[in-house]
Image 1 (tube, one colour):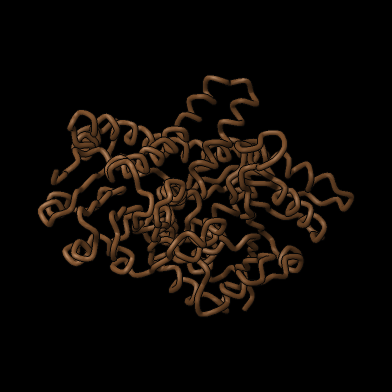
Image 2 (cartoon, helix red, strand yellow):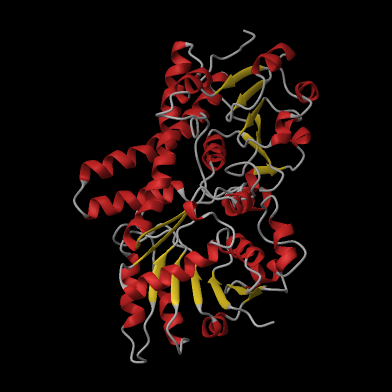
Length: 458
C-alpha cells in the first residue's frame, strides 16, 4: 500500500504509544511508526502483552499493528523515512546543576534533535509532544536549522492532554487538540499538515491553533490549574476534619457554582502521576528565571500542600493507632497513582509507605496492576515490605487497612470478611473517599476518611 504520509514518533511511552495507535486507527492512509531505544519496551509493544495498561488500548493496538502501525528500535531508519516526526521523549525534572529539583532536564530532547538532523536528507515537520518549558521550540530550531545541508525544519508544539486511565477515550473524543506553530508562511503550512491528521476524527471546533509559545505554555498551565484545585480542596479537607464539616458536601456545594464547576474537587490523600508535580515545578523555575518570585511562590505552594496532605495522612494513621504503628501490620490497598493504570510515578502511596516504614510498621502493599512498579519505587526498602496482589490476604492480621487508589473492586470487597480477618480494634482509612463509611462503621470498623468526621467505637 502506498501511504499518503509517513509519521514517526520517537518515544514509546505513555504518550507516544497510545497517541500513535489512535492516529493509525483513524488515519489508515498514513504509515505510523513508533521507535524507542528500549528494546524490551518495543518487544512488548510487538507482543501479546503490551507494556501499558489502559482500557481499550490493547484492542486499538491489535487492530492496527502490522497494517499501518509499526514498532521498532531502528530510530535512524525511522527518521530517514518520516515526513512528520512527533517527539515524545522523557523530560524529567533535573536532579543536578542549575535548576535541580525544578527545571526540566532536556538532555534527551537535545540528543533527539541532533539525531534527527544527522539522519535527515530532507526538511521535516517536527512536533513537540513531550511537555516542555516555553521557548524550547526555539532551541530545537537552532539545532536543526543550523546545518550545512541546506535543510529547513519547522518545529511545532502539540501538547498532550491525556488522563491516564481514560487515555483512549481522551484521544478519541478530546476536549481540544492544541497545535502551535510559527506565524510564518512555512510555519502555517506545517501547522495545516498536522491539523489535517487530527481532522480525520476531531471536529474542527475542537482543534485550536496558536503560536508555538502559547501552545508550549498552555500544557504547563493546564496541569498547574488542575493540581491547584486538588490542593485547594485538600487544604479544606483538614479544616473539615477539625470543624465536623463534610468535605464531600462542601465540594458539592461549591461545585454547583457554574463559575467553579465540580471537576477536580475530590479530596484525597494527594495527587500523583508523571505530570502535575513535574510541570508545576517547571513552571516555578521558569517564573523564577524571569524574576517573578511571587508567582513562583504561589505555584510552589500547590506542591507543598500536596506533600503536606500525604504527611498528614500518615500522621492520622499514627495518632489513631494509639501513637504507635511499630510492629503493626498496615495493609495499603492501591499503589497506582489513580485507578485504571499501572503507573506509580509520584503516587501518594510511595510517601505513605515510606512514612509508615519510618515508624517501623509492617507494610503490606496490594494493587491489581502496579505491584511490579511498586517494587521498583521501593527497591531500597523492598525487603521490609510484603507485596500481596490479593486484598483479602493483604488484610489478614492487619491492624489497619488504608485505601490509596480508587480501584472499583475495592468498593466491592466483602468488608465483613476483611474485618473478621483483622486485629481488633480494626481501622479503615479511606484516602480516596470511595466507600460507604456509615456501613463500614456499623460492621465494626473505626473509619477515618479525608475531610470527614471520624467514626470510632471508643
